[in-house]
Length: 147
Figure 1 (cartoon, rainbow, N blue to C red):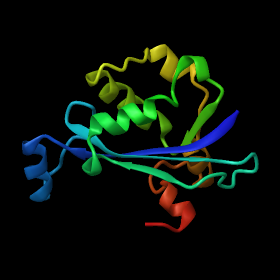
Figure 2: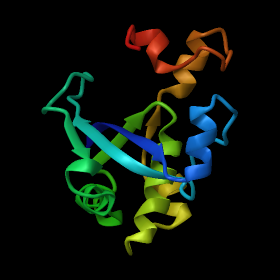
Figure 3: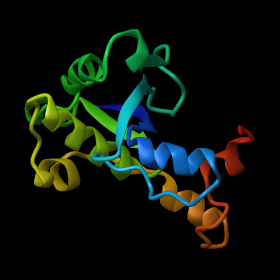
Figure 4: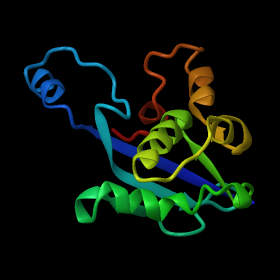
């Protein structure tokens, strides 16, 4: 069993949303229909939470979204369920986006697998608790000093 820091970054693909964003107008949140995955990052962690291996960053602009999804999809296989346990802030956004974007490229995961069978650790709830149970300003950046 190996815990793994897991994170994705997304970018809007819908031209109307991009224009609204540029002009400072409100836009809907990113979702699999209006966005694509531009980076997938993971890092294997030791039992004490320190890094075990170097941070792996797969960049869409160096290959393609399809390529980075296919490379990372081997980590999330039902037969390897306890080999890699994803840890992240709001991890179900990352896994849900990954699941839906992977489907476009023929890689299918059931909702049950992603949301029930796959062991995960979501540190969002810890951050909310450390912020007097307020969602506002409970982002990971507040607790790590990174911006």
